[in-house]
Image 1 (cartoon, helix red, strand yellow):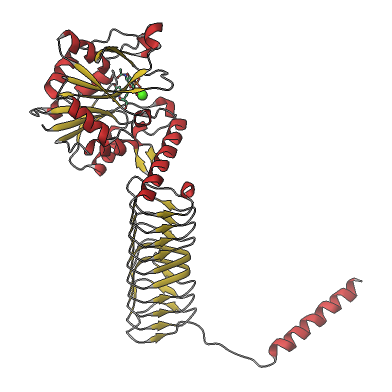
Image 2 (tube, helix red, strand yellow; image 1 turned 90 degrees about the vertical axis):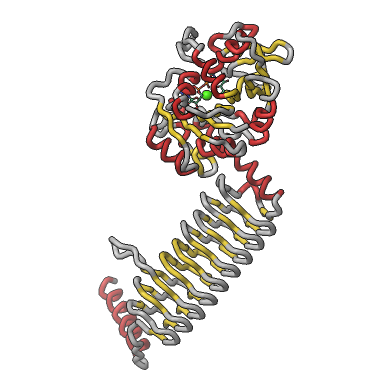
Amino acid sequence: MSVSLVILAAGLGSRMNSDRPKVLHPVGGAPLLAHAMRAGDTLEPERVVVVAGHGAEAVAKAARAENPEVLIAHQAEQRGTAHAVAQARAALEGFGGDAVVLYGDTPFVSGETLTAMREARARHAVVVLGFEASDPGRYGRLVMAGDSLERIVEFKDASEDERAITLCNSGVVCADTSVLFELIDGVGDENAAGEFYLTDIVAIARQKGLSVGVVRCDEAETLGINTRAELAAAESAFQARKRAEALEDGVTLIAPETIFFSLDTFIGRDAVVGPNVVFGPGVTVESDAVIRAFCHLEGCHVSRGASVGPFARLRPDAYLAEHTHVGNFVEIKNANIDEGAKINHLTYIGDADVGERTNVGAGTITCNYDGVFKHRTVIGKDVFVGSNTMLVAPVRVGDEAMTGSGSVITADVEAGALALGRARQVVKPGLARSLMARLKARKAETKKSEG
Ligand code: UD1
Ligand code: CA
């Protein structure tokens, strides 16, 4: 049976002490909302509805970046989780399958857990995801009668006895879509918070004689982010998981605890990553590539057998073909580096193409920006770019050409040519010695007149 997702993301998250909507704070370089959407993706949902309120425009933009087909429902006033789900009614019009409710601030629910909930739906009209909390705090408590869930009581409304329950509500719920909306219609706001609680659908379902089941998951999956401290803890949990996954996938991490990944980082088998490397969003590294210590990569691709760093920075749209070498203190942005090319020392290559086997000498700079526009530098194959060459773009250097060290290249260089763009050297025999002698004599004179 088909399934749709309703992701609640309207809250401000006042405890974050931020102007940014809570669900847009990042973990692993991606907004919390993107994590929740990805978790839900494992169910191959037919429709995905994000309920937005605070910062709705920004939330919608982030949601679309993750899934262009996402439907946005608006909740103008945050009147509780049941009220939030109710806003998705129009977006789910005509959809006949199950609905799974997720929270945008709960990033770690696993695909397996969601699948288990879908399976449990074969036995129950409503399925709630619960967990044994080491510190139940202010979570809603699950009141069980044997195997069946009777009701959920919010902390604020719970008695002493109910507060002693350690089985808590994660917030994730699965039910047939029309049943879910019917149950929500019965929810009122007579409670301590004066809100429409989604949790009330459990007692209402029981009154209607419907069965409600609980699927339990590990507490780590239900970690909800409400504060900066929880955000930091989530980041650390996320990094620990990504490191373990990379090792499992056959990647060598020399000092795993010093390597930072993004949600979408992909690293191939037998790649080696040295200490203190940061993978920003959008990085793929193929098998057998080596990323040495202290590199920062973002939005780039490193092909098989390439080597990067130490201390290199790859910025968005840097594409390194197979067996390329990018060495220390090199920055590359929006550039294609073809097979076997070498850019080993102290260089900036931006908005450029570097051909096969070309060698770029130390201190080379593509001067790509005139203060207003960006221009491209195109370097052919088997080129030798002399050290400290300034390539003032737009400029082209043909195949097998050379540039002399220290050249400022402002005009195209044809294939096979040597380009020299520097002042001719002048040598004056003996002048250094005589100049030095004169200077020393002057210094001695000054000392005498002072003393
Ligand atoms: C909720 C549950 C509680 C559970 C806890 C787990 C209810 C009534 N309580 O409490 O049982 O243990 O989550 O973390 O459901 N939201 C909206 N619109 C609203 C209200 C909330 O979109 O009007 C969104 C929030 O942005 C957030 C999510 O729903 O992503 C949860 O809301 P929150 O207020 O944090 O619920 P809790 O009080 O934590
Ligand atoms: Ca919460």
